[in-house]
Amino acid sequence: MSVPEDIRQCVVFVGLKSGQKLWFKGTAFTVSVPAESIQGGRFGYLITAKHVALRLEGEDSFIRVNTRDGKSAVLSTGNLRWWYHPTDESVDVAVTPWSPPDIVECRTFPTRMFLSDEIIQRESIGAGDEVFIIGLFAHLGGSARNIPIVRTGNVAMIADERVPTSLGLIDAYLIEARSIGGLSGSPVFVWSTGVGGLHNRIYLLGLVHGHWDIPLAKKNDLIAVDADPSGAVNMGIAIVVPAKKILEVINQPELVAMRRKTERRD
Image (cartoon, rainbow, N blue to C red; front, side, top):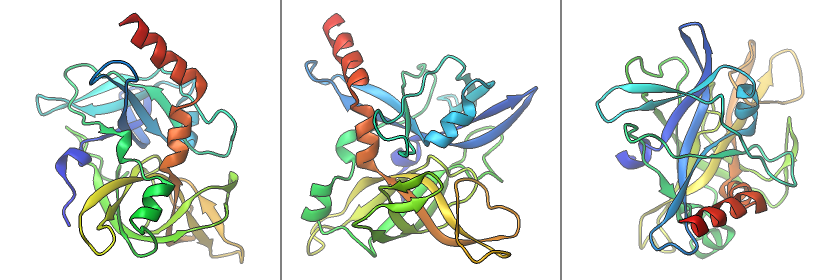
């Protein structure tokens, strides 16, 4: 199946600047939350992995976006504040309110596309279902414009228990797809054909946390969240932070209060 162009346009690249050099560190993507009291109103958010956002804090960081004139622009993130999960430090999610300039060519997708436990049960989504990742290929991100890569795979496991990672035990899905340097923070989508194959829908499964490696000199497995360490073998199993954990960050009390304050002012 081909990936819809509007979904491919939801990602931007994030990184650090050193002089005139841009160092891409990961991927972010944009979503919208519906307003509670304004018909048709919505609030935009930029989403990435927490471990990516922490690298950007206090540094000369940037977001590179595509623009409507067929080029790209580099936006400073020096004044951006990232919000993390309010109660669970192990959740590898960072969000920030996002209202890009009109010149930016970037699509957002609504939170109603987020996969929930109810949808998983209703549509029997599980091991074997097709998934795809959209994000930065660190070796070829594009010179004039962002060129996101698409990687495909399958759901490998929707575990009934937390998964061990470098951040500790976390709620996560496992997918059969290689996570490589630059894909941290990328959105992961799942195709659902529904019970009996009656429809074809796309849901946000979550975001890329990292992958499992097998160090050649050690017996124990290692969790990696960025580029493959030298001498290690990527097992081809990526760890995905569930969409519901992203929603918990977006709907934390402070951000909900900010949205309601804006609605009252409007």
